[in-house]
Length: 316
Image (cartoon, rainbow, N blue to C red):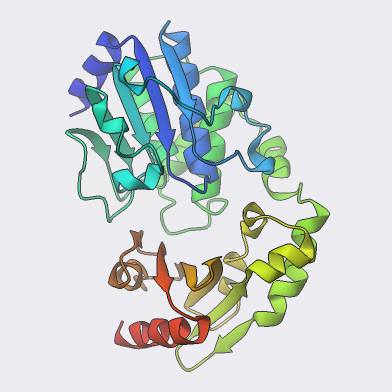
């Protein structure tokens, strides 16, 4: 299907690029790298995201060109939907984006059922950024320093700093090639991982008090409520990375982060070690993701939700 994707890129003139809500480094790095590539090819391209760019990703080259308001969607020849396993993950434009004649989905989630006719899917890939790297190498485009920086950030963040099981030899070869092309690992890592605002630390101090460890089920969890956010003067983006804290505990196989989204709705983020497949747990509640990283949303009060999740863990 790569030939068809390359043909669509060659024939297209106006491109829309979008990704999922609650943006992460893979989604943003991939969008920006693709945007820069298309611009270098003389194409007209626009990146639309429903949500604002998180502060610690605003350093990425071309991030200032992302828009959050979109009109006349029918004017685009081709639409790229990145890092999404389902169309509705792009947010409020999901019903309108289907009016674009040619849609291309590039994604690496195991739960992706193939909602686009044109797609580049590989659940074994570390990230959407790695898939775009492969595509660009296939196209023999000029890998500028800015493109390399964005793709490196995408791969770095979705592999947990090259720590997750999705990190393969091909992943490291790609990262090395991107560094040779101008990506600066130290500068990128400092901006992403060492530039937290005080509000994030204030929030973390409150959230750590909710830490629960269950050595029987080998699970650990943290809970973020709207009151935590309000009291710390923090926003939802400041919860980024919290899920990795319980995951570091020795003897814990599954880490969980419950984040309050509504009065009686929580987002559940799951991380696991080894071959523990948390995607099965997320799927049980209507979500999805990867073997070692998945998410879903669950309605109810937090105590009831935690009990339901623990029952699913026991079944697993």
